[in-house]
Length: 251
Image (cartoon, rainbow, N blue to C red):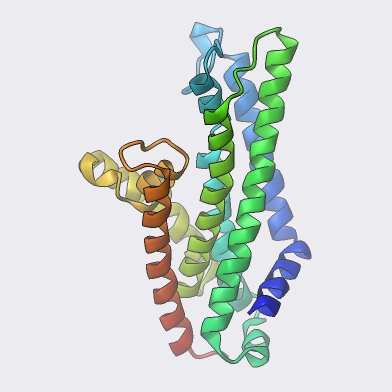
């Protein structure tokens, strides 16, 4: 299994998909973080979450929270793990090398979870550079404390688990475009719709509930419980993906 996980990590290092999504996510985070500060003092050009004054750790943590952007990108990344192999017709070779298909799926989940965590570290670091640079340049204090550190530490956990969840989606839906659209649609449409119609149910959903709890945005559940809840969802989607992968004919 360790060999298979290493192989998956090697594939990620040698493909443009990972780097492309990482660059795109980092660019979005830098842009949004910069706009939060640049437009924060202009009441006519404010954006949601704009920080005109950073006085407390909670203010800084709010600005540094990039989980919403990063999680979506790593979910898409994970969705291409198996679905991408079907698209490029390399899946037959993969299964010839490792005939036990469940081992392949589990190895991809583990490898992409690690890669997703690294993704989160890089994107979070970009947000920190923007925030610290802006506050330093404007002569403002930097309220960097334990709650900020906790938020920074938990974001990679969320991005890693989201990548693993995406692998499960890609295993259950072998078509790459369909898998990506399913993941995107679930986060951006289905969960938003459920949250709007049944607010009490929203906190128990994978991303709006468990994912938000991991990064501290859903205090009713808490980070530890959020991780446990997300792992339960991850187990279910991966189990479904394994069953579909086992039964699917490979051309």
